[in-house]
Image (cartoon, helix red, strand yellow):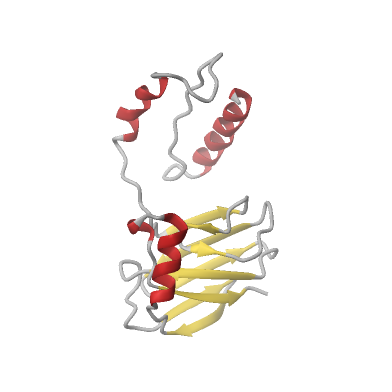
Length: 163
């Protein structure tokens, strides 16, 4: 387990070096400890207390792994290793994919975009959607059920084809 944690620490170091505002992390290995490290985790609490989780960040970089959703993005078909980048800018949502991902669901909340106005979705410099994304009880219920976290509820969603 420590070997995997050390590997992730190196990966996060490299990502943070290329994006100094992102990938904030701290990796502390406890030699000889298993999954439960008694009180060893308490040293992380003051470090974690410096940060506030943002469940709806303005920019997301998602490397597909075992989850079908990541922040405000979702897909029905995972492609391990595929990377999707998405960014919000006012009423525009920019999506960039390496080409492996064919469909993507974009979930939104009123704190992200004004859902009473049209939203544009642009992918690889092409406009894929321009219109209103409607709030639905189905999206609200589904996103609450997925995470059980009121901060991660989304009001509306739209699925787009990237290729």
